[in-house]
Image 1 (spheres, rainbow, N blue to C red):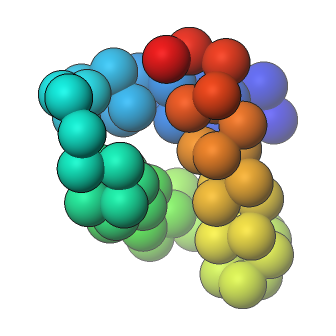
Image 2: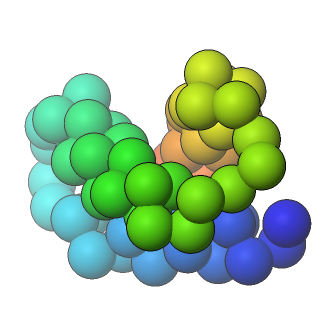
Length: 64
């Protein structure tokens, strides 16, 4: 699921601005929720949310 990392990075770059870390994370999560619904993935929503949340936190440390 490397594509998921790429999508998360893209969404993070799209909402990037100084400060407002939790608000930006919520915006990225909202975008990813819409994507989850569109793709009809075979991953339970709770598992997807856990993976994405950790990915956002990690990428925020690495990218910014």
